[in-house]
Every structure is written in C-alpha cells, then in structure tokens.
Image (cartoon, rainbow, N blue to C red; front, side):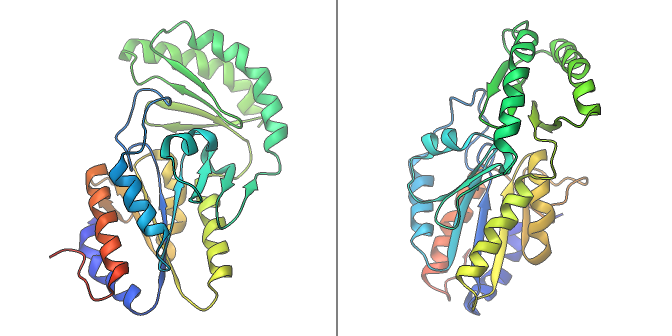
Length: 274
C-alpha cells in the first residue's frame, strides 16, 4: 500500500485541471477516534469547521458515510445540509439526493421480530451492547473479554444461522461489532456510487474525482468502487487484505488532510504540504 501523502501532488494537478472532488468519509475511526458506545462521539469543533469550509467550496462535495443510523450521525455532527449516509447505505440524505432503500421498511418489520431474542442473548453480557437502528442491528462487543466474546458470538451464530440460510438477513463484521443487515446487495459502496452519480448529473461538464476514507471492514465496499476512478484510503497501518490502494495513519492525519484540502481548493497553486 502507498501512503496517501505521496499522491497529493497528483490530486493537486487534477484539481488544477478543473476536476471536482467527491469526498466520502466514514465517521467512527476516521473523523473521530473509536468510542465504546454509539451515544458517544460528538464531532470536534475543528473538524466541523473544516467540513463547513469544504461544503462552501465549489470544488469539493463532502459526505459522511456511516454504519450509525442517519439520525444518530446528524445529532452527533451538528451540521446542516451535508450529505449523510446511515445504516450502512440504507438511508441517504443531503443536498445531492434523499434516498431510502425500497426494501428498508419491510426489513425493519423483520428486525422488530428479532430484537427480543437477540436482546435476551446480549443482555447476558453486561459489557456488550445491542444498538437498535431503523434498518440494521449492531452488537458491540469491544469491552468484552476474549472468553466472553467467543461465548457471545457462538450464541449469536447459532441463532442467526437458520435466518442466514434462508437469506432473510446478512451479517457484516466491523471492528468488534456484528451487524445484522438486509439480505440485498446494498452497502456503503452502493450508496457512495449513488452520490457520485448524482454529483456527475449536477456537474456534467466537470470530471469528478472520488475519494473515500475509512477504517473498517464495512468500508471495503466503498473502497472497491472509489479506487476505480479515484482514491481508496484506509485509516491505519498498511494492510494486505484490503481493497484500499492507499493508507493514512490515523484520524489526526485525516484531519490534517482535510485542512490541507481546504487550502488546495482555495488556491489551485497552493501545495498541500510544504
């Protein structure tokens, strides 16, 4: 993998030639450090400031693409009119498009029937958390011991197996999270593509450079599509089994990139790094 810093001169060149940037950003582990509960994780004021600045630019369209529910992300970032994606792509809202997957409400009713059984399993582990979202469920087990994790996940696998075999739902792993999602081929990558396509419709005369930055296994779907015409950037150490073709070290370095990007789009001749 190549450090994203090494391609900033190429990004500078593409912007100077008139390209516009669509910037997809994961939330947890990317814009903020990982937190133990989805109730935590307010967007810091300096990140909020830099995103507002990018939103005001005609050369960049940012979007936050998260596994959190749309309302949870909206409440934690405190930004109006930014493009938001929640529930791993199921919900999209913002200046480009409003979208809910057509099968979402039907799946929501299915999830409601699962909640009592899954909750009874998760409640056996006081440090585990069942996050109930409109269109997905997430079991957080980051605070469990290794022994407790094995026990919890074994019980969840046994419960979910007949449902997975009947293709009534899918499971998607994250960082110490098990997500229960719709059985359809839809994810962060599809939502990312939807937004890029909408941007292309609104800016038909300008080439679009897609960038996606994320840290989690669930971001691989967005890496798969962003790398085709742009940049797929993983937050963290270089990794072999990833679809990202670039990496960036940490959320702090993501923040530095966002501030440098502000400078780039203010002045096409400004270098990203001195």
